[in-house]
Structures are given as C-alpha cells and as structure tokens.
Length: 286
Ligand SMILES: [Zn+2]
Ligand SMILES: [Zn+2]
Image 1 (cartoon, helix red, strand yellow):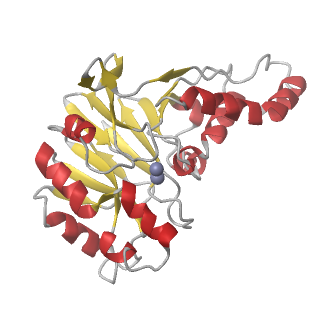
Image 2 (cartoon, helix red, strand yellow):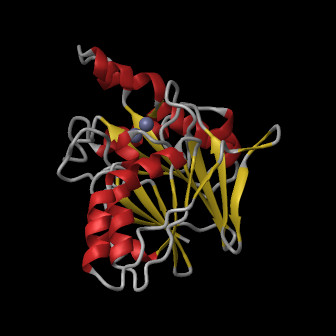
C-alpha cells in the first residue's frame, strides 16, 4: 500500500502546498481522501487522473478539504469513456454538499451534454454518509473487499460531524486523521496503525500572533505534541505531520523549519516522524 501526499497545505494559500488531499494506492486501486485546492493539478503531477479513482472519501466539509471536489467530478466525467459514477463517502451533510455542487455545475453540464453526442447524462455521484459509528461502538466499515476502509468520528468542533479514515490492506494500515483534537475516535482508528497522518498546528507560534481569528485555529486542531501523544498511545509506526499551520519555513534548519517540527514530535513519540511535501510518496508497510 502507498500513500501519495497530493496536498499538504492549509487554508492559507501557499505556492508550494496545495490544499488537503491524499491518495491511497493498493495494487493499482486508488482512493482519494479529501479534494482541497489544486487537487486535480497535483493528481496530474502524480500521473493519477480523476477517472482512475475508485472512491472519494471526505473527512469533513470545511472548504479547504472540498473546494476542488467540483473539479474532480467534472474532470472524471468528461475524461470517462464512458463516464463512470464517482462513489463518495463522507459525514452527514455530504449528500447535500454533492447535490449543491452538481447544481452549481448545472449550466456547464448542460452545455457539455448539448455539445457532445456521446454524453447523454450528467455526472453520477452516489453518496453514502456515515457518522463513523456502528451501534454504540466506534468505527464503521464502508468497504471490505481486499481493502478495508473504516471511518471513525473525530472532534473538530464546532465543525461537526467529522471523520478520520483508516485503510487496511496487505497486512498494513494507514490512518488519515484529518482535522481534529485528540479524541477516542482517533485512538480507536490509530491502534496499531503503521502510518498515521495528522493535521497539526504550532501552538507556541500561533499563540503569539495578535489576530484572534488566527488564534482560533488552536481550538480545534491537534498541536504537534497532541499528535505525537496520540501516535505514542496507539503504538503507530510512523507519524506524518500534515496540513501544518503555520506552514514550515523553507530552510529545514531555520526558524520554524521542519527540524523544529520533527523535534517537537520526538519529545513525545519514539517512532519515525515525517513532514512531507506535495507529491511525496510514503510506503505503508507492516
Ligand atoms: Zn477543518
Ligand atoms: Zn483543514
């Protein structure tokens, strides 16, 4: 199994970091998790077209995670010969979001159907919503056919509901934690995982910025220490710091460079810690 970090950025525009999106590949099958700013550009750079995706999974409906869903839907549709449906799994609210997206695209869809004789209908985007629970328990399996995909609820309040996703295949596992503070759902999914990807923020830096709207970011994200403690508690192999706020400096050894971020995580977690760039591929092995 492999993980492709398509977009490692945050909502703050960054020429080097696209919005949140990751692709998980298993034996030639590809799953897309979130579709933030620039997602389809980064997929092209990874030689991965939207038509090749088996499923789109969303962690939550914050704009930085879904702003390019419309591009994935349209590009998959017009590059499909014939077009095939794009199954989408996400938290409650996803069906309304997809319906609204298709409504937004309605004029374009009409033009393309009118122009191309072989396009008879608009994009098909079947949606399945889950809250990440099964009965009273944590964890809801949405696919189990060689690849097992499990959702669990996260805590990104007041944004609610939100999910993390775990993939199990070939005896290995990866968790895409999304935006969340530490919570039972993350602990449940991360237990024994080989790779754990978490949105992280630097509370030591953000708390010094005299802009309340920026400081608010701390309310609902894991700090580097939080993510490292979750990783240690769950016994994961590799912690991947992602969607970093503020974006790490370009000089790894400079102020706010990746060396600082990795060292902060290492204070609480003995395993491997990575801070990837867009396009980086991470092998997921047991
Ligand atoms: Zn968010
Ligand atoms: Zn986000």
